[in-house]
Length: 163
Image (cartoon, rainbow, N blue to C red; front, side, top):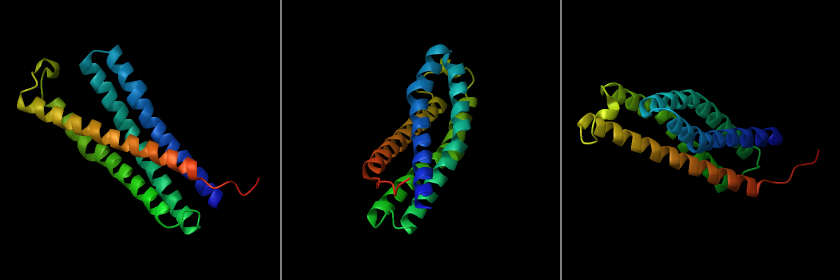
């Protein structure tokens, strides 16, 4: 049971962090380099919206696996609670992006006709820019938290019980 929980934890966390890194460092730059800004924004927004449920599912799986590892004695004391806290913060960020911040960004963008021709000082554009900046900050926090958690977990994993 412990070995299965460890596999679920590392797989879920690795897919989650790898997916976030791929979106941030490969997909976003490629899309924004390849398409006009309004089209790129729409495409990348759709990609983020599609990735959201996967993030949430992977976060729940990783958190449940940590719970099993804590209950089974694999993660004792603060080690388990800190991992669980980091996962829950990441999960809250993912839920916020999926259900609050993402829809608010889309609403602001849709409410501005000729979005790219509007200067930054216009109130609706300023609201969009502020929401977008928060989205980037929170995604960065989640990615860094996930990378740190993955590295820490890999560095402290117990040796296998055998074949």
